[in-house]
Image 1 (cartoon, rainbow, N blue to C red):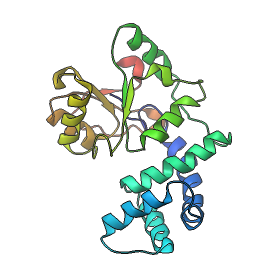
Image 2 (tube, one colour):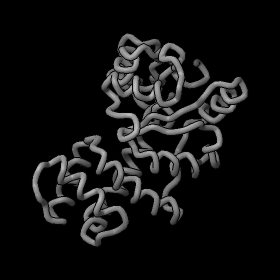
Image 3 (spheres, rainbow, N blue to C red):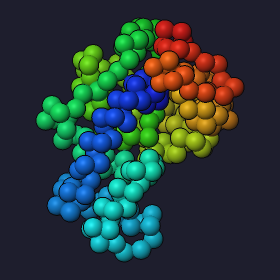
Length: 217
Protein backbone atom coordinates (compact mmCIF):
# COMPACT_ATOMS: atom_id res chain seq x y z
CA UNK A 1 0.00 0.00 0.00
CA UNK A 2 1.65 3.19 -1.23
CA UNK A 3 1.29 6.86 -0.43
CA UNK A 4 1.88 9.22 -3.38
CA UNK A 5 3.19 12.63 -2.32
CA UNK A 6 6.78 12.31 -1.08
CA UNK A 7 6.70 8.53 -1.54
CA UNK A 8 5.93 7.69 -5.15
CA UNK A 9 6.24 11.26 -6.45
CA UNK A 10 8.31 14.32 -5.49
CA UNK A 11 6.67 16.77 -3.12
CA UNK A 12 7.47 19.52 -5.60
CA UNK A 13 5.40 17.86 -8.32
CA UNK A 14 2.31 18.27 -6.16
CA UNK A 15 3.00 21.52 -4.30
CA UNK A 16 4.61 23.48 -7.12
CA UNK A 17 2.50 22.26 -10.06
CA UNK A 18 -0.78 20.55 -9.18
CA UNK A 19 -1.79 22.75 -6.24
CA UNK A 20 -1.25 26.12 -7.97
CA UNK A 21 -3.00 24.82 -11.07
CA UNK A 22 -6.06 23.87 -9.00
CA UNK A 23 -6.09 27.01 -6.87
CA UNK A 24 -6.28 29.30 -9.91
CA UNK A 25 -9.39 27.44 -11.07
CA UNK A 26 -11.37 26.81 -7.86
CA UNK A 27 -13.39 30.03 -7.82
CA UNK A 28 -14.14 30.21 -11.57
CA UNK A 29 -15.16 26.52 -11.51
CA UNK A 30 -17.65 26.95 -8.66
CA UNK A 31 -19.09 30.27 -9.87
CA UNK A 32 -19.63 28.85 -13.36
CA UNK A 33 -21.34 25.75 -11.98
CA UNK A 34 -18.92 23.43 -13.75
CA UNK A 35 -19.34 19.61 -13.52
CA UNK A 36 -19.42 18.35 -9.94
CA UNK A 37 -20.11 21.77 -8.43
CA UNK A 38 -23.46 20.83 -6.87
CA UNK A 39 -22.01 17.80 -5.04
CA UNK A 40 -18.89 19.67 -3.94
CA UNK A 41 -20.92 22.65 -2.70
CA UNK A 42 -23.26 20.34 -0.79
CA UNK A 43 -20.27 18.72 0.91
CA UNK A 44 -18.83 22.10 1.88
CA UNK A 45 -22.14 23.27 3.35
CA UNK A 46 -22.44 20.03 5.32
CA UNK A 47 -18.99 20.48 6.86
CA UNK A 48 -19.47 24.18 7.57
CA UNK A 49 -22.96 23.57 8.93
CA UNK A 50 -24.83 26.43 7.30
CA UNK A 51 -26.16 27.70 3.99
CA UNK A 52 -23.56 29.35 1.76
CA UNK A 53 -23.74 31.20 -1.53
CA UNK A 54 -21.66 29.95 -4.44
CA UNK A 55 -19.13 32.71 -3.78
CA UNK A 56 -18.92 31.71 -0.12
CA UNK A 57 -18.46 28.05 -1.07
CA UNK A 58 -15.60 29.04 -3.36
CA UNK A 59 -14.03 31.15 -0.61
CA UNK A 60 -14.18 28.24 1.84
CA UNK A 61 -12.61 25.91 -0.70
CA UNK A 62 -9.77 28.35 -1.42
CA UNK A 63 -9.19 28.72 2.34
CA UNK A 64 -9.06 24.94 2.79
CA UNK A 65 -6.71 24.70 -0.16
CA UNK A 66 -4.35 27.32 1.28
CA UNK A 67 -4.34 25.53 4.64
CA UNK A 68 -3.69 22.18 2.87
CA UNK A 69 -6.72 20.63 4.56
CA UNK A 70 -7.82 17.19 3.42
CA UNK A 71 -11.59 17.70 3.33
CA UNK A 72 -13.21 15.42 0.77
CA UNK A 73 -15.16 18.12 -1.15
CA UNK A 74 -11.90 19.96 -1.84
CA UNK A 75 -10.13 16.79 -2.92
CA UNK A 76 -13.05 15.93 -5.19
CA UNK A 77 -12.86 19.35 -6.82
CA UNK A 78 -9.09 19.05 -7.22
CA UNK A 79 -9.64 15.82 -9.12
CA UNK A 80 -12.19 17.39 -11.45
CA UNK A 81 -9.93 20.34 -12.21
CA UNK A 82 -6.89 18.14 -12.75
CA UNK A 83 -8.91 15.82 -15.01
CA UNK A 84 -9.41 18.73 -17.36
CA UNK A 85 -5.73 19.67 -17.12
CA UNK A 86 -4.52 16.15 -17.90
CA UNK A 87 -6.97 15.85 -20.80
CA UNK A 88 -5.68 19.13 -22.21
CA UNK A 89 -2.07 17.95 -21.94
CA UNK A 90 -1.26 20.68 -19.43
CA UNK A 91 -0.40 18.28 -16.60
CA UNK A 92 1.79 15.18 -16.33
CA UNK A 93 2.23 12.79 -13.41
CA UNK A 94 5.80 12.84 -12.10
CA UNK A 95 7.00 9.51 -10.71
CA UNK A 96 10.36 8.74 -9.11
CA UNK A 97 12.38 6.52 -11.49
CA UNK A 98 12.81 3.75 -8.91
CA UNK A 99 9.03 3.28 -8.64
CA UNK A 100 8.06 1.63 -11.98
CA UNK A 101 10.70 -1.15 -11.73
CA UNK A 102 9.59 -1.88 -8.17
CA UNK A 103 5.93 -2.06 -9.19
CA UNK A 104 6.83 -4.41 -12.04
CA UNK A 105 8.90 -6.63 -9.75
CA UNK A 106 6.16 -6.81 -7.12
CA UNK A 107 3.58 -7.67 -9.78
CA UNK A 108 5.82 -10.44 -11.11
CA UNK A 109 6.16 -11.79 -7.57
CA UNK A 110 2.40 -11.81 -7.09
CA UNK A 111 2.39 -8.96 -4.57
CA UNK A 112 -0.68 -6.71 -4.62
CA UNK A 113 -0.04 -3.03 -5.26
CA UNK A 114 -2.47 -0.38 -4.01
CA UNK A 115 -2.48 3.37 -3.58
CA UNK A 116 -3.81 5.20 -0.49
CA UNK A 117 -3.62 8.96 -0.84
CA UNK A 118 -5.50 12.05 0.33
CA UNK A 119 -6.04 12.95 -3.32
CA UNK A 120 -9.27 11.63 -4.81
CA UNK A 121 -9.33 8.29 -6.60
CA UNK A 122 -10.01 10.20 -9.82
CA UNK A 123 -6.91 12.34 -9.28
CA UNK A 124 -4.83 9.26 -8.48
CA UNK A 125 -5.90 7.47 -11.65
CA UNK A 126 -5.14 10.54 -13.75
CA UNK A 127 -1.73 10.88 -12.14
CA UNK A 128 -0.70 7.29 -12.89
CA UNK A 129 -2.25 7.09 -16.35
CA UNK A 130 -0.27 10.03 -17.74
CA UNK A 131 3.17 9.95 -16.14
CA UNK A 132 6.65 10.84 -17.30
CA UNK A 133 7.18 7.04 -17.42
CA UNK A 134 4.06 6.34 -19.48
CA UNK A 135 0.77 4.78 -18.36
CA UNK A 136 1.37 2.97 -15.05
CA UNK A 137 -2.24 2.19 -14.14
CA UNK A 138 -1.79 -1.42 -15.21
CA UNK A 139 0.81 -1.86 -12.48
CA UNK A 140 -1.71 -1.04 -9.74
CA UNK A 141 -4.53 -3.12 -8.31
CA UNK A 142 -6.63 -0.25 -6.97
CA UNK A 143 -6.90 3.02 -5.11
CA UNK A 144 -8.16 4.41 -1.81
CA UNK A 145 -8.71 8.03 -0.77
CA UNK A 146 -10.22 9.79 2.25
CA UNK A 147 -13.73 8.95 1.01
CA UNK A 148 -13.22 5.23 0.38
CA UNK A 149 -10.59 4.67 3.06
CA UNK A 150 -10.97 7.46 5.59
CA UNK A 151 -8.54 9.96 7.17
CA UNK A 152 -4.96 8.81 6.78
CA UNK A 153 -3.95 9.52 10.37
CA UNK A 154 -6.67 7.33 11.92
CA UNK A 155 -6.06 3.62 12.52
CA UNK A 156 -9.70 2.79 11.71
CA UNK A 157 -9.03 3.77 8.10
CA UNK A 158 -6.37 1.11 7.78
CA UNK A 159 -8.64 -1.48 9.34
CA UNK A 160 -11.33 -0.54 6.82
CA UNK A 161 -8.94 -0.86 3.88
CA UNK A 162 -7.62 -4.23 5.04
CA UNK A 163 -11.19 -5.53 5.17
CA UNK A 164 -11.94 -4.08 1.74
CA UNK A 165 -9.03 -5.81 0.02
CA UNK A 166 -9.45 -8.99 2.02
CA UNK A 167 -5.88 -9.20 3.28
CA UNK A 168 -4.88 -9.78 6.94
CA UNK A 169 -3.48 -6.60 8.46
CA UNK A 170 -0.19 -8.26 9.33
CA UNK A 171 0.40 -9.06 5.64
CA UNK A 172 0.03 -5.45 4.44
CA UNK A 173 3.07 -3.20 4.11
CA UNK A 174 2.45 0.56 4.03
CA UNK A 175 5.02 2.95 2.57
CA UNK A 176 4.72 6.65 3.40
CA UNK A 177 6.87 9.66 4.19
CA UNK A 178 4.54 10.83 7.01
CA UNK A 179 5.21 9.48 10.51
CA UNK A 180 1.64 10.03 11.75
CA UNK A 181 0.24 7.97 8.86
CA UNK A 182 2.73 5.20 9.53
CA UNK A 183 1.82 5.28 13.24
CA UNK A 184 -1.87 4.85 12.39
CA UNK A 185 -1.13 1.95 10.04
CA UNK A 186 1.02 0.21 12.63
CA UNK A 187 -1.69 0.67 15.25
CA UNK A 188 -4.02 -1.19 12.88
CA UNK A 189 -1.57 -4.10 12.71
CA UNK A 190 0.06 -3.24 9.38
CA UNK A 191 3.75 -3.47 8.64
CA UNK A 192 5.32 -0.08 7.91
CA UNK A 193 8.30 1.42 6.11
CA UNK A 194 9.08 5.12 6.10
CA UNK A 195 10.24 6.60 2.79
CA UNK A 196 12.77 9.33 3.48
CA UNK A 197 14.04 10.64 0.17
CA UNK A 198 16.94 13.07 -0.07
CA UNK A 199 15.08 14.91 -2.84
CA UNK A 200 12.30 15.66 -0.34
CA UNK A 201 14.68 16.78 2.44
CA UNK A 202 14.79 13.40 4.20
CA UNK A 203 11.52 13.60 6.17
CA UNK A 204 11.52 12.22 9.70
CA UNK A 205 9.57 8.96 9.69
CA UNK A 206 9.74 8.49 13.42
CA UNK A 207 10.42 5.02 14.80
CA UNK A 208 9.63 3.26 11.53
CA UNK A 209 12.26 1.52 9.43
CA UNK A 210 13.38 4.00 6.79
CA UNK A 211 14.44 3.55 3.17
CA UNK A 212 15.84 6.07 0.73
CA UNK A 213 13.99 4.72 -2.30
CA UNK A 214 11.95 1.72 -3.44
CA UNK A 215 15.09 -0.17 -4.35
CA UNK A 216 15.73 -0.60 -0.61
CA UNK A 217 12.34 -2.19 0.14
